[in-house]
Length: 103
Image (cartoon, rainbow, N blue to C red):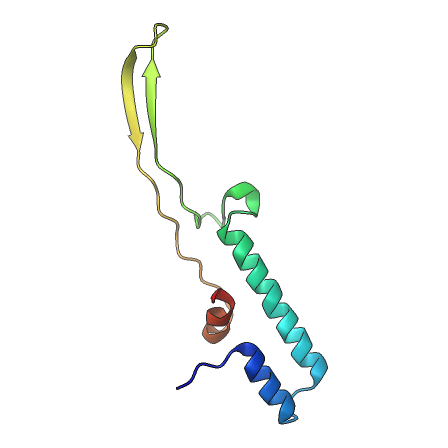
């Protein structure tokens, strides 16, 4: 089965007189907006750099090492915090549209 882009699908439906040009333009505009939002979320551009879906961490956290030192700079305690992978983000739109938006 050949993959068809959303634009190709909409143009074919418009050609077959199933939808009009205004509907096609609206759907394509919404798809572009979704793709732009997805890109910004993936880059952490929303929410101050940390993704959030309810209480679930979708961006993940970088690991770090905390070293406590005394006044003379001698370390006396070291704590390693492992990185935390982000959770999967699932949208409520159709799987085919999701594929188109993410590619």
